[in-house]
Amino acid sequence: MSVLFSESAATHRTRGLEAGLTKELGTQTVIHRVFLGQEDMDEDRFDTIFLESETLRQVTDAVVTDGHLAFAFAQKYGQELFPDTPVLACSIPRPAPTILRWYENVLWLPEESSIQQAVDLVFTLCPQTQTVVGITDTSDDGHKRMKAVARAMRPYQKRAILIFPGHEPGDDAGLNFETLGAVLSSVPNRGVTLFLGVSEDSAGRPIPEPMLAEILHTRTASPTIVLDDTFLGTGVLGGPMISGKSTGRSAASILKRLRSGENPREMLPQPIRATTILDGQALARFGLVAPQKTTIVNAPNQVEKKGNAIPTSTLGWIVGLLLCSGFLFFSKRHRS
Image (cartoon, rainbow, N blue to C red; front, side, top):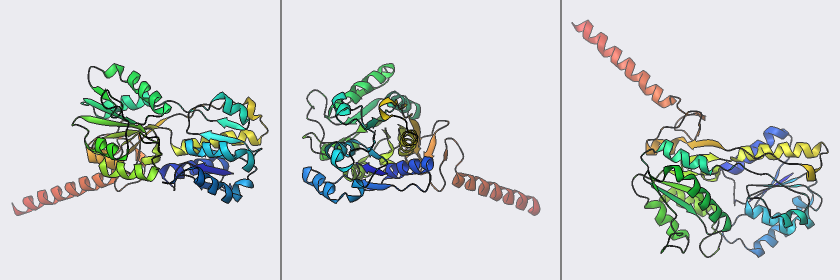
């Protein structure tokens, strides 16, 4: 099978997606991966990948696409590269009915919306929040996300204001690479950033994932909630997300059904559920405590764990302090 990624190189998310596939299908599964994202991505780049994609021409099992760029590639070249192969479309909104009719082997994997959970998490982690800064682009998906956040904020409208830089009256030119960095670094005190995803700048040019990762790493000045695990490890907090591993496992379950002979046109995949995953180092940076039953990754000096467990480094300090206190106590008694 082949997996088409919209990223330019392996990330926390892409590794998780492959791990999810392997966990469900077995380690004997051979996965051919293609990373499509590049700074100079254009039609010529697509054509180059198409001409070099000998492994894709040999695929007979399934193709998994992750993200908009990967699905666009499958739309353009799928009929020639893998005409009779099921395509499992992940991490995109539902394709238009005309697209699904045109390419009958496409199976879309729906995802549970996590925007309400993300807004609730803002006020669980940071109850004193007075400003929520939403970050998104000017695409149709971006506008849908803004409307969903506005609805999710209604219970909190007396506690905090919601702003979308680049989409406000008098500031409606969208965001480019420079203004995005300025926004991230100037979020006010008691402000939280809700990063909803940015795939293009205000002129419609794609912003490559490595550039976004770098700007999040270097310019983020406030707790930042995200909706997927692409940027975990860059300094963002994390959030309720559709993880790469969950996506991989869901795609694998569909593939098993296809292998058993089930007709793809009659399948109705269940939505992939969001789970809350937080970055331990980001929590420590902002002095925040994870809610119960939260998965913690990238925790300082420890393995992945569940929220509210005592970190091993902290436990070591506690034991050391107790030993020192005991030594001083018995020393004083001996001298007396």
